[in-house]
Length: 341
Picture 1 (cartoon, rainbow, N blue to C red):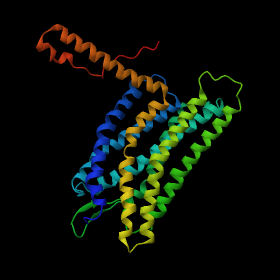
Picture 2 (picture 1 turned 30 degrees about the vertical axis):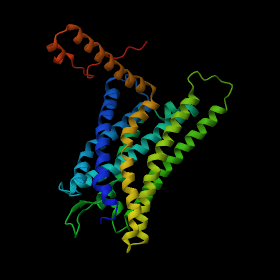
Picture 3 (picture 1 turned 135 degrees about the vertical axis):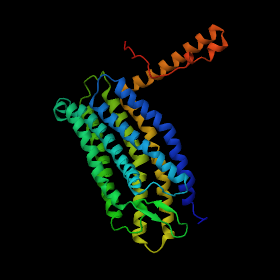
Picture 4 (picture 1 turned 60 degrees about the vertical axis):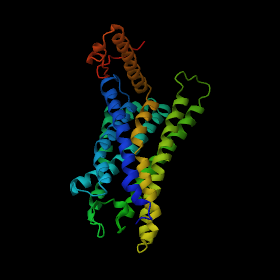
């Protein structure tokens, strides 16, 4: 239908967004993983959560080329049902992985402020790793219904084979309760947890006004809480509202597809916008983790210094052949470790 905006979004806007996200997000997340694995000597609980958040981002970005190919191919899915199911599950699974790990980071700061001694027993390094593994398993289990609702369908008029989204199924007997369950258990409860942790932590710090705070925990707590709430408000809240609206309109008006267009369009645009979170999360890691931020900045600083020194050496030789030699190429793969003063 030429009067609808949804085909334009699905065929042009969405693959463009996904391609930009892939180009920007994959290098950022791969660099973040490299810093986590090769630069950080001491891992705190927040470091473990941030690493798992980055790992979830990277796993989704590696599957993103399949969606880009699908939308650029005019929504013709030629890769079979198993891969279609895997891509749809991975998108859904990744989304709640991101929510849970951001929540864990907020809870970690709450324990460090309100229960500093008890937190070492309640959530040690080994328990933190087990918690992360449990989150991966739990989100995979929660995403199992997505596999059952993912179908390969053929459009009658265009003869186009599509990889369906459970949000846009005509039959809402399963998709509506499932979407509401995920919205309440996997989104609303984590949001309430973040608010609870933040309010009680601020209350605890205000209860001790006479004590000096050389580490400025109050300011760092506000940064963590603000960043977590911004992520929830900008990305997660509109996504769940649009998804539920698209399914509810199908349940309330099953015989009037014209009324589905507006919520479907909003949900498709929200899918585009939410893909940007894979580019935001590396910045969130640098915003939260001071050690990660120093290593991240130090890596780029050393790359810039080496590039300037090598360029200067090449031009001082006066040999035009040496200037273009491979010895003048700069790589960041063998940057020596930053010596902390």
